[in-house]
Length: 202
Image 1 (cartoon, rainbow, N blue to C red):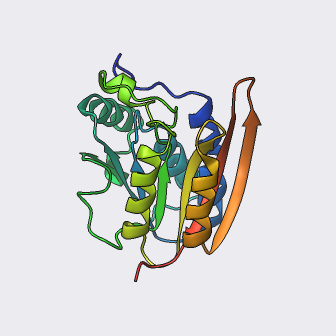
Image 2 (image 1 turned 90 degrees about the vertical axis):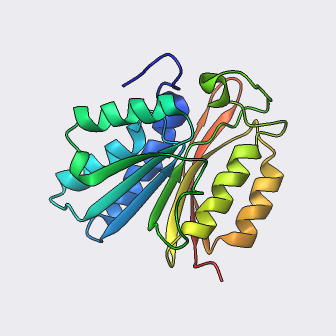
């Protein structure tokens, strides 16, 4: 559910959802602790949890995190509207700073990636990724490495508007496996859903 200060599900949301649904389809039988960083309305995780439940499994718990109080309120309303309170909690937090290491088994994020610096309200912050579109991506990926339990998938979006060379270098240094689930070419950018399988942080 939306309010005017929350980023509405859009093309990038639907693209990451494709990757997330593919991963949850593969992992549905396992016990899963799912964490979404920068959850916005909660659309992606709600979709993933509903997919797992539709397959007859209920062995999952999801933590939805956003720094924006507006997004937290929106996600909470969405979770209640979908009657998923039993399976999810929503936390207002800066990235994963509120979570201990090794606490997640599937991590999702669709970070602000536009290469702009906008110090406006919560809505503007939801698309402003800094000069190279990497400020929030870097933070969320670092958080993912820290909270990942054992070997776990980290699913996220990247855009051709970002500094992809820096992203690729980071992934090559951190991922055991890199999978690209979907790429969509728009007239101004290409957006991809990527999965990085990482191991436990030493």
